[in-house]
Length: 367
Image 1: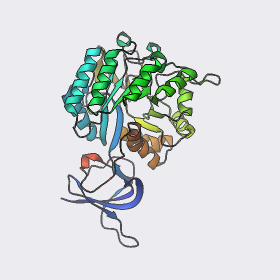
Image 2: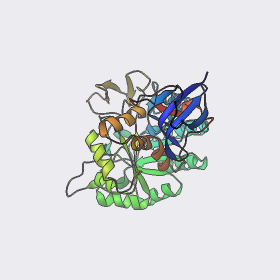
Image 3: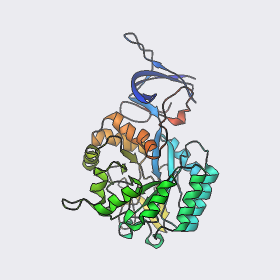
Image 4: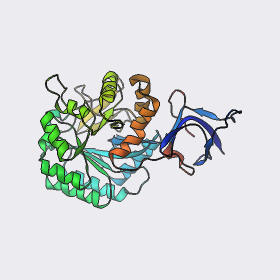
């Protein structure tokens, strides 16, 4: 059975286009064509935006499963499937601070799962962080960068698997940062208390990204810009969680306006297993639960996010005040730039679980 959609805005062939008719057969896009000019528009479901599904570079869990709890190919597949049901077509499953043998098992799982549609690569967040800015990461596993981590990064890169490694640049020798960048690892600074000078050293050594801007880093001050002010002033990419819990919407707007180059801000969900799953889980033996729309531990501190990327996109427009095309780019296109991957585009034959349709209220439309 075919369906016809009229998209006011669509990302296609590397540019946004207006007023496109998109026909589907329930499984794939079968035709894309301009809407008739100056004539009657065929009966069609109206969309505010159509484009490739979103890309999330920080997904810790989904559908009741956490990668840390079960670092297996099955967990990766389950996370991908859960996210695809919610409009995010490609993810970096994210392993947070843990033991070296768990990292090795996760790399084994990534190698086994590689080639699965929607599995874009791996994000290893920690364990080489500043313990003072560890957030929900376990202090017991935080340690200096070691050869075991370098070996696992080499395994991933040798297989052609994109990988992001979040570390605290003040805690890692510059030679090791440079070695990671040289092997094609996207080195992201996060969970850090670096001052401006230490951050600049990291950038010079190969840091190209910042992990969840504002969170797990000290606030900037008039005489101490620190890692946060330096990140905003830099040409590097920066991820940000737009759930209204981790960062005030006014601060999201400020950061987006302040960046010296366009196309350097991107959204992440930092989603946990509660997306498409139960409202609680265990991490490091501690119960994490949804409370007031936020994920918190027993002390009431944030511990990941209970949000999907489509909701973050909508928040970017309705709460932050971003233009829809900018918000979409932050959730679908810039993440590809971060990882050095080509941007997707709407095309005939595209599977519908790789497509995002949004209605006038920016709610996801299921073709």
